Each structure stands twice: as C-alpha cells, then as structure tokens.
Image (cartoon, rainbow, N blue to C red; front, side):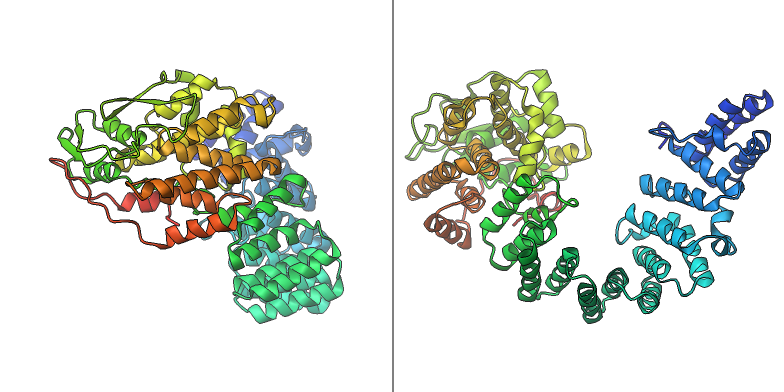
Length: 614
C-alpha cells in the first residue's frame, strides 16, 4: 500500500492530476502509472474511474498498460481488474480484485458498481464465482472483526446475486456460506450451507454446514455435520481435528481426545492432530511434557500444512512459559508507590531491614537517583556473596550498596536490546528464535546489559513501563541478554561452551534477577535441545533447593519465581515439581513495605494491563 500521507484522497487527487497531464500529452504509459497510484489511494473514487475509462478509450481497452509482472503494484492489479471487466471479462477482473483483497483486506477494492450489479452473476460461470468467493475467504480471518467487514460487503452482494441466479449450485452455495459466516451473516450462512448440502452432498458441503452451525452456536448440529463429512471422506484427518476442537471448546475433552487419537491412528504425524492433541492433553492435566513434545514435533516437522498456534495458546500469560513474572521485592513496591503518586517526587530516605537483590536496588537508584538507601543488618547467608564459587561476578558492593563490576554496554548493543526486549513472548522456542538478533553482540556487551540495563525505548510500551514500573523493563533486558548468550559462539560444543559456562556462573552468582534470567535461558536451551535436558533439570533443581534452604534463614525474594521456573523445565524431577507446587500453593510470606519519605499511593492498575499474572 502507498505510504507517506495522512490523507489518501488528497494523494489520489495529486496522482489523478498528474495522470490527466500525461493523458493531455499523449503519454499513456505514464498516465497509467499515475492512475494505478490514484486507485491504490482511493479505489472507489469516481473521478479516478472516469479517468481510467478515458485512458481505455484511447488505448484499445488499456489492459496492456497495466501488466502483471512478478511483483505487481496493487494499484496496477486493481486498475487492470476494472479494465478487464469493462472489456467483457468480468470473471478475470473479479479474480484480480479477490487477489487484491487477500493482499490488503482493509481496502474497498470491490466497492464499485459493476461488482454489485445484480445482472453480473447471471453472466458468469457459478464455478468461477465460487472460486472467487473462496479466494476472498482464504485471505481474511474467520470471523472478520466487525470494524473490518465493510470492504467485504460487495462480495457478499455478489454472493446473494449469484445464489439467486444459480440457486441449485452446491459449490456456490457452500462458498457463499463461508463468506457470509466470516462477515457475521450467520443465519444466511446456515441457510446457504444447508441448501448446498442438499444440492451437493459431499464432505466439503458438510464441512461448510458444520462451520456455519458452529458460528450460530448450534453445536450438536455442527458436530453432526462434521461427522457426516468424515463419513464422506474418512481419510481427511483435518475434519477429525475440527471435531476435536469443537468438542474441546465445549469442555468435552475426553471425546475430543478420542477424535484426536482416531486421527493419529491413521497418521501419527498428521500435524493438526498432533498439535491439537498435545494442547488438549496439557489443558486436561497441566503436564508440561505435552508442551515440550509439541515443541519437539514442531521443530522436527517445519513443513506443517499450516501455521499452528496451539503451543502459544497454552503458554500465553504463564510465568516463564510466556512472560516474565513480576518482581516482588520490597524496594520494588516502594518504587511503584513513588511512580503511582499524583505528583511523584524524588529524594527521600529508604531504610531497609536487609539487603535485596542488586538489580532491584539499582532499578530504584537509577529511577530516583537522589534517594538515600540504608540497610539495618546483613543476615546470613550474605546475599552479597555468590552461592557457589564462580569465575564471573557482575556486582561488587560499596558497603551494602551494589555497584556494577563490568563496563556499560556499547551504544549499538543498547540500540539492539531496545528493539528486541519485551516482557512477553509466544513460547520459549519463539523467544530463542527471536534472540538470534543478539547473536553478533560481544560477550562484554551482553554482560554489560545485565548490570547496566538501559532506559526503556520511546515506544508506547516503553513509555508505559517507564511511567509505571521500570523494573519490568530492567527484567526484560536481563532476560533477553541471557537469551542472547544462548546464541554466543554456537560453534562451541555445549558441554565446553562459553555460553554454558557464563550462564552457570550467573545462576550461582549473587542472588539476583539475573539468576532468574540465566536459569530461564538454560530452561529455554532445554526446550530447544533434548540432549541438555537432564543437565538443565539438575541445575534448576539444585538452584531451587538452595533457595529453599536459604529461605529458612532469611528472606529470598526470588524463590517463587524459581519455583515457576521449575514448572517450566523439561524433564524436571517429580519431587522437585511437587516442592515447587507446594511453595506456590502457599500464600506469599508477609512483608512490611519500607516507608520512605514523600512517597505516594501504591501502583497497581498499569501492571495488570501490561501482563496477566498466572
């Protein structure tokens, strides 16, 4: 689509003026180019179509002035469609308009008189009209959002006229039903599909009828129609998956899985059944193994029949599977209070009973540089010390104040992370794939990003986080930097790799948000590579167990997040899973939020809008 203007009609008028000048000079090819631009901006503007007719009159129909090369401009396609219709080839024109609609469904490409003319359908082969309607359906969602339906009304009028002209054509009735269903004309869709199934009993007719009934909320009739479709063609396993999905949508999981198993018995690799089956089994028992198996299948079968969203649907909103859980430190609660105040003020004094993770404290000091933080005591085990001996440390301490022990990242690294970091992702494999954008960063830059998270970018999300909870942006940067570590020197064998060594150092370093981020990177590696799953499960279990033991002696703010990481880990031991679930089932330990001077009311609403808690 054309870009660079806020007023498409004004742009169309400019292109039209240039087209008229070219016509006056006899330069038909340049006139055609400007008319293609005009019709792309304003596809129903009468003046554009008048000029197109003038061009056609001077150029033997003008069709050849709008050639379809390998990557034609959409305005060229639409102009050619109208000229074909004017030349007595409306079927060819309709196919081009349908192609334009599939490319840009929001534009009113077909909103012109000849498409909606009642007599058009009677002059066209009903098979061809059915193909055009199916082509339109293939390019739009099911259903189309209500606010986006107007450009499709001309096709629905065409369907009405076609059904009136060819009332007993089963394929046309079914295709018309499919379009009607997508644009919300559900009663009409049921009527047409029912008539189509009577006129042309077939698998496809019953599928159309089943979908129409399902859109109308008539579940029993929808299932009956889909079962009849199976009777017509027992080898079309996609219908089995449709039946399973319909049953699952109404809570009938056992029946749904029976249909999945029937499909898998015929073809164990049929992608729709595999995806649906794993999603429904996870929905039934919550066992992560189903999702990991689904991820393995998707990785091993990249050429599935179509894109599936089952894994993303299961992971959406789930801590670590699809998003970063919220920070829970007392210092973070204070920071949210400050930002939620009607007139936030800086400065003040904050007295803490004990140290908290360095990233949390640095987030406060970065956001409110002139606040003074004091700590009453340092209980054992000392939070400022690594949990095991490590060769890499990101923090040093000036008394009880954390200070980064690595240099700040380069400007290019900051720019890269600002474009990539986000508090949510579809599922762990998708996060891994996205993080490849950090593969070329130096190790020093990745470590610098962990200890020196840059400010949020000037995007809508970045501004919202900066205003209401910058800690979520800090955590996002750290998570994605650790995911970037997974792509560091991938030519090195995992067991001897720099990426493994660094991530393990981060896991066992000072107790921090970086601990969580590094563990999540290891968990993601286990999702991607079955050969590292046993090792990663052992590391996650050991780090979680260590946090539970430490929590017997002092507060461990990240322990619930570590428990959620256990639940996201492939091949986690049953005993560790049980301990994690037990911890999460108990209410969080009470905490007295420190009260600094001149702080406002508690922040809340914005966080719930940005990320749903699991």
